[in-house]
Amino acid sequence: MDQRLRVFVTAAELGNFSRAADALYLSQPAVSQQINSLETELGVKLFSRTGRTVVLTKAGMAALAHGRDILQLYGHMERVLEDMMHEAQGELLIGASYTYGEYILPYVLSDFLRDHPRITPAITISNTQDVEIGVSSGRFDIGIVEGELRLDGMRTYAFAKDEMQVVAAPEMAPSLMTPPGELDTGDPSDRTSTHDSPVEVRTAGDDVVRWLQGQTWIVREPGSGTRDMTDRLFRDFAISPRSLMEFTSTQAIKEAVEAGLGVSFLSVWTLRKERQLRTLVPVALPGGTRVRDFILVQRAPEFETRATLLFADRLRERGLPAR
Image 1 (cartoon, rainbow, N blue to C red):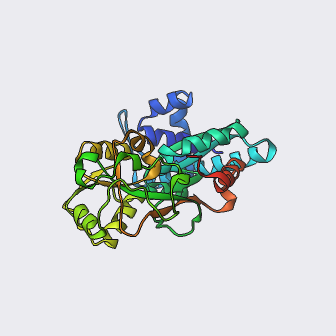
Image 2: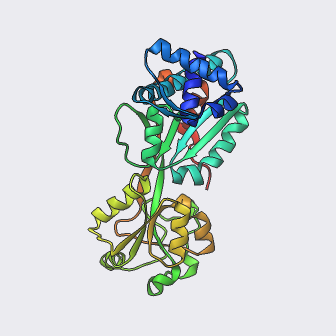
Image 3: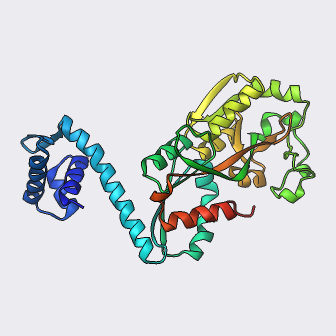
């Protein structure tokens, strides 16, 4: 790898030659020399210099975009070659959407790392759209989402199902509450049918829809898989919410619903503690349970390390922990 490129990218990202020198354990004159040499070879000025201030030129901005890609590909090459020589080890870059990443992934990783202790996961939690872009650009080795994918050229595999429920604070609709003894425990064996949804709020289907129509809906931001499912629910039942309140955090949504600010549509995996404590109750929808897929997202096979392959195989085999 040409050290000059790494020096240039570091200086461009930090916006200062002195800070770049500190980050790379070089002297400032050495940083300037490396960048001057790269500029001479490329035949362009990469920085506009005014005293101690450096600003990327138009050519410098183009070089930075490509330079980042080159360094990223070089890092992938090093990891693939390392895997060919040794036991699976090193960094595994995982991008996961909020539902899976915050409420399921920690348990799956705990099991996976017992078998592969030399692999070091680095997890980024974001919405489905951001995770998909991250996998496509190479920022993540593997992605786990539950929303609609919008980019072409990605390899996807639906490895598990996720049940969704409308939830409300118990005091929001007391006349519709089911007696406490009928509360769902979260254990699938407690259900009489695979089509039955846990029911704590009972009424005729039209009454439910009318009730939901009049509520404030607490929703995730556009680009979220949970928001995609909520929008689909609105279309299916012709619901035009009285008002929407957006949050970028599932935990914040649950707190808002508990506070009586409105209702929401969430994965049952995010609701385990709230159901046990009876701070949130599901509202039974006409037609029964709504289900979506948890989806594994990968790039072309040539970009995969052994750690990526092993983790993808684990998701296909046991992508959900026991409830």
